[in-house]
Image 1: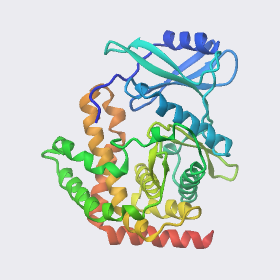
Image 2: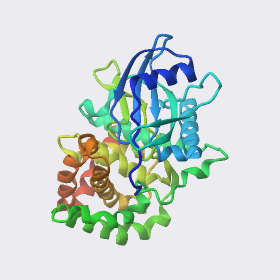
Image 3: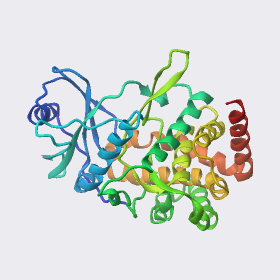
Length: 356
């Protein structure tokens, strides 16, 4: 994991100055949005449409090829009919600019993009009906499928071999397990890591490769009313964790995050799986690995959050949102066991698919 890097903290006047200088826009209103390690500012300019100024942390700002790829992916998905944000060009035609500022760690450089604003509210604020979970699974699979067609000279920037959030890198958590010393959670995490090594890694050669969004969580999926007392997905945001990976990883990540706010987390897997398989049926190795991969993602989230709090104690409340509920859910899933959980997921997915 990276050592302490600087989370941007641009003032209202700095944001207004960037908007004027780079985009010739006058900020009528600016409002900070929550973020893990970047700075997202909602902007209403005098000249028209709402937008989001995204200022990347100093570490990610050192990798412009990766950010260029993320920006290209968003545009590619948008062109293919998926609700992704796109970057707006500056007055000089650039899609990103490098700004220098002191946000508490000395002068550092931060990459800045102006993104379109997507309507809707985060899915975390809406009761997760089976239909909405089905649509989320379907959207995740559709997105990864569409990205298979994408070509770009800098696509290798997405390889990110040592990326701590990549589900292929679960063993990178081991040096951080001491952060759980004295916590009963440590035993669960160690057991899951052991299961991962013995049951998931040997099957990886049978997983199908793709490009992962890598962070389809309940704060990164936007929904709006569909006119029939339900909701439809109106946006997928935050492509900062994108990397080359496997289809089954995306599914596991989506199931794990959608459990967090659900009153009965175990039932979430079925409808998401049904939606996913309406686009991309799983093979046997993928099916067999799903349970351990979902638990592995919980472990990544919990351990990385503990580490992040040691680096950003002032941002503890936001960082630990997922953790507090996650500890309870991962312990429950581990106690119930693979066979029981799989039965719940695969049987309800089969029933839902029949009804469709």
